[in-house]
Length: 143
Length: 109
Image (cartoon, rainbow over all chains, first blue to last red; front, side):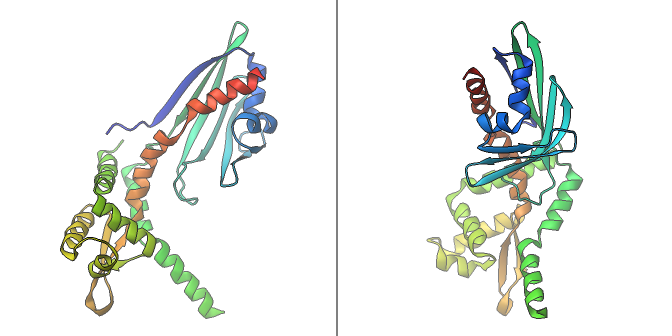
């Protein structure tokens, strides 16, 4: 089928890297174009959060902060259950070009799952809701 | 990418391409494990056709047969293959083009 593991886009922006950097790495910047509301702790390992409408919240983990050239974070793969450990890695690279910036975004890891990890997920998931509901019944019986 | 991952995703998409199988999977997702007879009562599909589709779905690992009440076989949806298919769809659903347009517009204002 040839589904992509990575997505890559490059755009030319008529503003210097410092201005683009602020749009990518501050709560004010992110909430202006990416999400509706945003918060960010800008350091490797720091957490960031964005809401999209009232329905969806994306939780990110900041991975790379090299002002004003590289900003990277991981986030959850949209559509998979909250407890699924798989995350994609998003990296923005900013290169100065005269008065502007060449911005590249790469998101990778869509096809990261190994056959072993798959088997583990496969076996682990067969219980799923049945076992969670079983635990609820046990809990209610004990109360 | 290990080839069996693609094969699993393909089986999910093949299963979903057929309206009867889509209805059966949707019924199992919405209502939980069910026998072929339960499904025949709920869906406008004959019991024979449902049994045939359930056999194919079980062979593909998308549903699992398990013992139910009165020695009836019940079928349960397996979510893991769906999650594998979902990760393929995630790459298609991510919309960087619009986001980057929004970024440009934000910077220009």
